[in-house]
Image 1 (cartoon, rainbow, N blue to C red):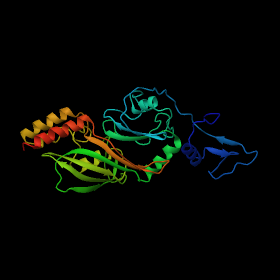
Image 2 (cartoon, rainbow, N blue to C red):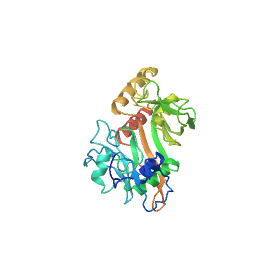
Image 3 (cartoon, rainbow, N blue to C red):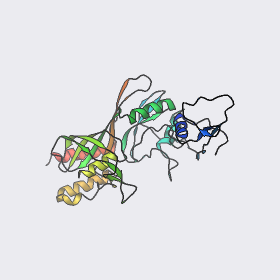
Image 4 (cartoon, rainbow, N blue to C red):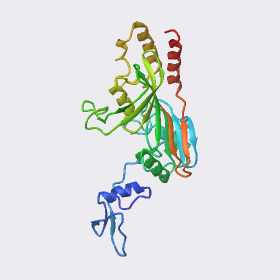
Length: 304
């Protein structure tokens, strides 16, 4: 326990300390509404977090938008968002520290600026905040679900309908705690999808997330038997090949060799700017590996 309260503690962290009874006046827990009186002895029980060194690294960023408040990047596939066990360098956070003079610290010392995340091998739009006030505003927009998030996903199989929804609760898999699955005890999860382009054995869909569960699109598409093409975690690589004829098996194998990840891209974000209240409608092009797969599919479709 620290003998003094660190200067970097955030309002959100103070609220958590209040709720857990770790802020006391004369030995008794207090509420946020408590007015400090002369002579009161205030104590705060606060565990100093482990503070590893975060290194600034000159990693290329595809910046879609930036101002004094926030930065939005088109994250490249293969880039981990923030440091963790076994990944102290080479992350988006390391790149942001190099590029930005200031970042919020409301999400912990290992995640400066990070308001939301994308999986390592999912590409696309990601917002980072440059101070805690902006961070809190953006976090509120995410929690209230007023931020619109659209993804492009290339999935196995063909849809008979042009649009639809997947409304199924998502939770951790009881068989593999690193994976998620549709399960009755999970959190409510809703994905809306619309067909963008049809190919012989694959479909490009646009997905709007109404909730923001971990791996939501990947889990939901697998649940309806349309796993995301290339997804090694959720049945999107080789498991579907055996259902194809010989020509399409060869084409699928060729495409999987071109795309060493899930074909999932955070394409569009709509949110209100935390200061100006202006509606920001940002879009990011897909990365080369995804585009090349689509180009081959379109070329092959001419001969079917």
